[in-house]
Length: 267
Image (cartoon, rainbow, N blue to C red; front, top):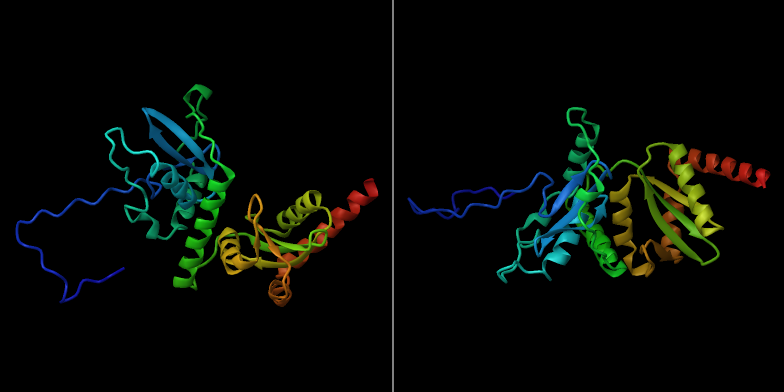
């Protein structure tokens, strides 16, 4: 935040200053919190019809999805739409919306009611390329924020690095579960999906830490549907082995091994 000091420009007496656009409750244009889905939803009105652009874990991801469609769909009069970027709203801390969402989730003052199917907005199909673009832009914004505020706390959860020997790749993912059991179940799901896999490292910090690591190792990223796999380079091996497993991560690996052994015995 800039402080206006003695050298700040003076405003002529009687001059009318332009009124700043009032920010919506979510913090972003075209973004709302959906209590039923427990996610942020991006909405845009086109030709008198409200279109659903999808559901997202963070408000800034939904805002980027809105901007992507808004720039290609001018207002009925032909003029450009305001976007979150043009309004300068992408410069704010992207994680305060996640905090406000948690407050909304845990609040018992407001009753969440599920809308009837007829009330739901029609869905617009977004290509995988656009979704990947939104995800990568969100990660870059996250990484820049934590460079600026290095002591800021990450979102709850754990970020994990697992090695996939069949393809000689790493996967960097996260879970918002705050305990070893939730992390162990994520390992089990990865085993079902990828087959052979080895948990190499777990770090305290959820989605925000994952995003920072994705940007850090972007030069090793392998273009996949979710852009979460990376070349098994010596650089990434060294990073993972240096950090290893946090205490809860160690317990998660033990629990995962017990789960895997039970599966083998059932077969």
